[in-house]
Length: 203
Ligand SMILES: Cc1cc2nc3c(=O)[nH]c(=O)nc-3n(C[C@H](O)[C@H](O)[C@H](O)COP(=O)(O)O)c2cc1C
Image (tube, rainbow, N blue to C red):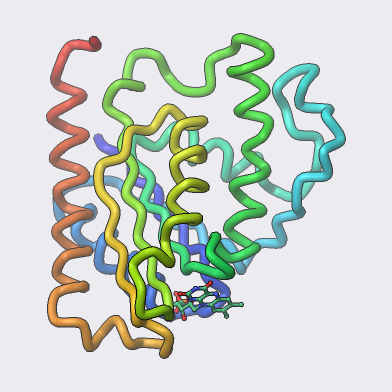
C-alpha cells in the first residue's frame, strides 16, 4: 500500500497551508493510501547544531524525537510538504526540520550509505504546497530552492507544486476559486502516480 506523509509546517494551525494539506491528504486517503501527518509546531524540533556527529555514522545525536520523523520521511513513498513563505524562504520551524536532514545528506554524500529503499526509490514523489502574502509569484523562489534540496536528499522526485500568492489573511485560501479542489486532486494524483511507478521496473 502507498504510504504518504503530510508535513504541516506552519505555526498558524488551521492556516492556509494547513487547509491545503488537509485537502491533499483527503485526496490521498480516498485514493487508497495510508496517510501519516506530522504537525511540526506540535514538536520541539531542535535546530541543527553543526556538531558534525552525523559525519561519523550518518546518525543525528540530538535526542528530541526526530528519529520518528526520519523513519517517516525515509520510508513513505510520497511526501506532501505544506509550509508558508517567511522572508523569502520557509518558516523557521519547517526549516529546522529540513536542516536536521543533514544526517541524511552525510549518509549519502560522505559515507556512501543508502537513505531509502533501493527497490522502491524510483517511485518516491513529492508535492509542495505553499502560500505567500506578496502580490508576486516570485515570493516562492527562495522556498523552492530549499524544497528542491530537501526532496533531493530524500531521493524524492517532484511530482507537483501548488503555490498561491496574495494569501496573507488566515483562511484566505478558502476564498480562492480552485485551490482546495486543486489540492485534493494533487493528493489523489500523487498516489496514482506512485502506484504507477511502483508497478514499473526500476530504471
Ligand atoms: C514572519 C513572517 C514572514 C513572512 N514573510 C513573507 C515573505 O517574505 N513573502 C511573502 O510573500 N509573505 C510572507 N509572509 C506571509 C505568509 O507567507 C502568508 O501569510 C501565508 O499565507 C501564511 O501561511 P499559513 O496561513 O499557512 O501560515 C510572512 C509572514 C510572517 C508571519
